[in-house]
Length: 378
Image (cartoon, rainbow, N blue to C red; front, side):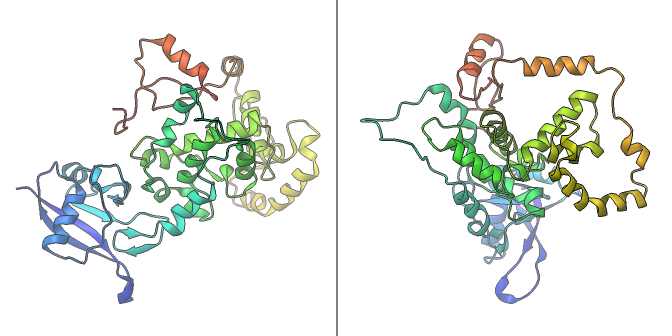
């Protein structure tokens, strides 16, 4: 029987001692899961090991941990695969998820962070008017549009690896915002604008995401929380024209405009355009002037350390030929409606007509694709 070494991070708050690492040698077939290994160590060596688990089938999301520094489900990772991805190729490290208080060993307090933020986005339908005599009739395409977010099992893996939450613990977070899209995209909900206004105006809302892609890589079900956050932004800005007090929408517009005009991002222009607008006068808007004054210490430090020079900052940023770039913008902006990729729609690649039918029928567009590995549709 193969032998594996699990290095588990231990922590018992009642002892008053700091967290520490402890090694456990186990004997299991390589195709057995890391969770099986932890439970064997608990059963045969130390019954005090704390681990939360239930279904052992990657459905309930209870056994979320970090394996070799990466978040995931302990029941969903084979021992032989975990050993290959370990730092030294021998010892498999297992520790609790990040961005959440540790209760004991591998058990984290999900209620104070994860579930608190889920409740923050009002995770239930808020229909307008009188209910129908029988049931609500929802177009198939509309439900397909929210299928990807409905696949979330609330394991907290995305929360564990979110860099924005690490810097700003008040950030609503990827799991909760993905849940928010599940109701924003549902035609039965009558509070779409109110939901988006709330999440846009909140300084810890949809514009607090930094696009690090960690949540997409961490999610075991292919929910792609960051993609759902981007969809919330697009509906808020492009459909409802919400200009938030955080200037998140203007900031995105400034990025797009600068790249469209010159093919490169001009950092010196980014801040004034984000707060004042794209016009020449807009850059000298009182909002932009106030933000520039607040940024003077940072600018001064950058100049003093020569990370930037006045000439480089003021020099126009433009590639020699922007024709090809403009054709891309014209192609995208010339589409009759927005095209969104939903990874949970199963459709063969050789049936473009059927795929186009899905894309055109959804409330915000969706596209056919093969479902991600581990999805319920595979």
